[in-house]
Amino acid sequence: MVKKFNPKARHRARRMAVQALYQWQLVGHDIADIEAQFLQANDVEDIDVPYFTEALHYIPSHIDTLDGHMTPYLDRAVNELSPVELAVLRLGVYELSQRIDTPYKVVLNEAVELAKVFGAAEGHRYINGVLDKVAGDLRKVEKKGA
Image 1 (cartoon, rainbow, N blue to C red):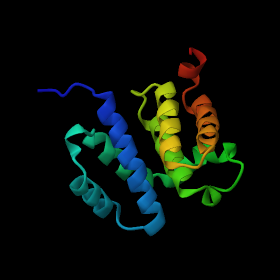
Image 2 (image 1 turned 30 degrees about the vertical axis):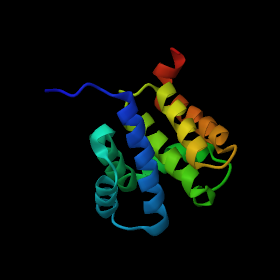
Image 3 (image 1 turned 135 degrees about the vertical axis):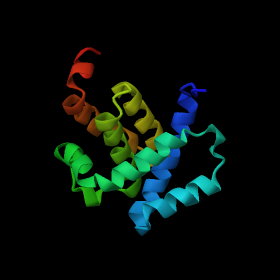
Image 4 (image 1 turned 180 degrees about the vertical axis):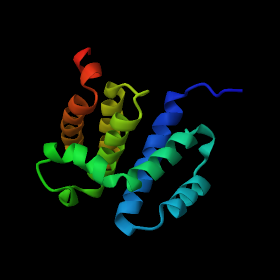
C-alpha cells in the first residue's frame, strides 16, 4: 500500500530536520547518531521519516554546494549566521535544489514558519529574502510562471 502524501507529516519532518541540523552544526556528532537519537526520541508515526532521513544525510554531505547557492545573497559570511538561520537556510536550499516535487512557495513558507518558531524575532524576513533569491536561480521557470 502506497502512503498518501501528508503535508503535516512533511512539516513535522522539516521541523525535526532543522533541530537535528542545528545539533549537528553545534556539536559535530556523527549524523547517523543524531538521526538515531531523533528517531528514537520522537513519535515518528506522524512524521515523514523518509524525507527527514534524506534531508539529514544529504545536507551535511553537500554542504559546500548548498552554501554556494546562498552565499551570493548573504549579507555576512556563512559562519556568522546564527545556527538556527543556517539550519533553516540549508534545509530550504536543499529543498529548492533537490526536491522539485515541492513548489518553491511552499519551501519559502515552510522556512519562514520554522524561522518564526526557532529563530530570532525578525530572522524569518532574512530567510525569506535569501531563499526567494536562491529560488530565482534554482527555480527560474517555476518562479517566472508564478
